[in-house]
Image (cartoon, rainbow, N blue to C red; front, side):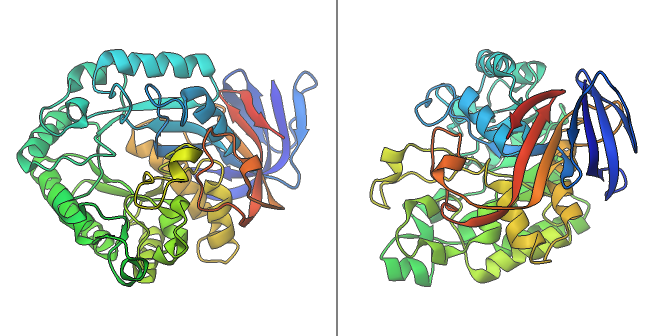
Length: 423
């Protein structure tokens, strides 16, 4: 047994903090109340610490199978645990693609053996994520996938996307849309505008995202499907989602820490750790994402943890791959930039990193309640540090936040009643 004493505990049902003790017995939370005593439990004094539900990430890339030089399930799980995550959802753009029950079983078995975090599998919508033929969705659902996505790719054929939604609606699992019209994004490298002109790089216009977002919202309306917009990055995307929600369409959306914190100006020195899809956008787009977060148009925050090796990111900008990592930096970057600056309250931030994403995939996690799984993150909000490569357990170090000063140190992560990270 584990006993956490005197911590400021986030009570998900009441969305408030209260100084309490938590007794963990096996995989579950046995008791939450003041002044718990148990002589047989390992006791930890959390008097100056905050106790959150374990973070839930709806969007990450573990690169396993096929690209394990970038990341694998074990290294990704360790990285997630250090960042306070107890549940993560991995995208299917692996080699082979997670588009069949065999690959789903491989990931779930390996994740179970590692045991550092709960790993939920997202299955591909189309075979090999090529956007030509529907994948074996039914068998993957039986194998436990929690959502469907061709993330990393975008189905361009509206008829195929309609058929996928019709099929998925029978299983009541969400479709996660990577929204990109390739005829518009083409060989773009950064946001289309003054910065792309200044850098002499091909640009990716906001319309490349917004046209697909609009299409998929309409298809979701017709099919009554739960559509989730991944890594929203533009003002018009936020407006489209806000309007759709008012119409009663089943749409949810996420933003990433990097799109919420950074703008296209971060690319000015050709740092490939600022190269991602969708690209970093303008100050106006960033503010729209923040406003969307505040009014709940943007439901959750997801990392889009996308590891790449050093030698790949050391290529010149146009040849380097898109994507940045995010497990270890997610909470401290968001806390530092939004909570300490009083833009977002801590309760809302925790809600968008725990129970909200859990609800989208219909999992009873991301809450601190008696009888619930003992998935807990303990944080020292008064601890500051410089985020360096030494802070990163991922195989890859491609973070846009290297060298930044953060507040909020993850001291303990407990998943299913076991320590998966402890300073």
